[in-house]
Image (tube, rainbow, N blue to C red; front, side, top):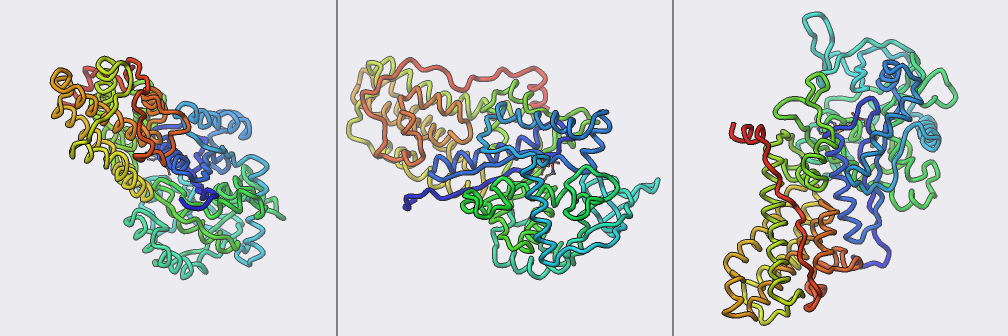
Length: 526
Ligand code: ME8
């Protein structure tokens, strides 16, 4: 970047419902955001990364009732399960928002008043279908019916008939403006397949949206009529503004970070973010976010993840089994981001062992132990570089970062990681062809050059791995003697290359090879 003031970058996760315990799906979304937040920070941006919990609505109210405690005590307790993930998964979020906080209630009521002043809210009666699990209203034409007469939403959630006085948002009036907005901002909804779905949904006609409820009271009171609480989605979406100081639009964070650069969501909640949210914002005179990315859905060994099937994967199970950085890596490496994915322990193990243990870990281990043993425990002085040395260094010090940056700006995590894997494989192939262990007697100067090139490539790989595997990358950089202030991505260049003479201690393994459990071997074979 050229200007003195860092460019702002605001990224958000969905705020998770506290009726559930955190699982692999929630972790997936937040790890993806964490990688982007870390990458942007290392790339010189001023980053704000927000996550949190969605605590109002009928679903949470019912979960509290089931647990036999009042909703506030229930949410105080369960929200902690999500907050604890920051430590467990090493998230670098700058804030954790809860929708029951006073700052949020104030923001949600202020946004409501703006919509009211704009003439976009009116009072009427709602009668129609509602799915508590999705906290969503559905039209009759969207539903199917089970043999016993239960109406089912497209998501599979059971619907109930609701009839009550309700405030409405004039969504129908926003159809043309939303379509024009999508047209003028082709990158607003990604991936393209999701964008097409949203465009055809809006083109098929929008109904006004019921935005308040009267038959329970666990929500933000509607300003001026506290018989009503706000519909949980209008309340929840506002969190993205609350965290910037809204309704104070002069607040420093609001001024620098709104509109958000990226709301990351799962495909299940795209409609709320890509249709309702920009309509609310435009109606309130605020800019819509720059981008909504809707990623795909994980199944577990081919099945839907559900409590009743007993196959819900808790993040700490993965961390215990594979290690923290290995888990973060696997989640983003395995499935092209945006597609659905099937979680399999056999695949996790294979990836971790082949790419982290045998690939990057082994490259580092071989290189540093040869330097330690054969070069007086310090970085050797490179001599004239051969074309193959130059080719490897050119990718490491230049093109790899350019490609990773392009892929991450498009949320293509798997392709960004592939750049790292490719260079690692090339470096491992280079060791085999250069055979530095043979050069020790024949040509020690050339051995020093080869080992120097390998160590320098490893430095670049470790810098690039920081967003994905922060602890392991830090340990790699420690072992290479790279100072803390030399770890920004701007140091991924020839000018910051390793200094000959830097002391190199005997290396410690970074990515241990994991032992294959018998049942995983069978799964892999089957
Ligand atoms: O929808 N695969 O919260 P929520 C991939 N409170 N991602 C998954 C997943 C899976 N199997 N299961 C969950 C809500 N997710 C609202 C959001 S935002 C203003 C309000 C992830 O607890 C994915 O990101 O149901 C999905 O969109 C989110 O969890 C839903 O979390």
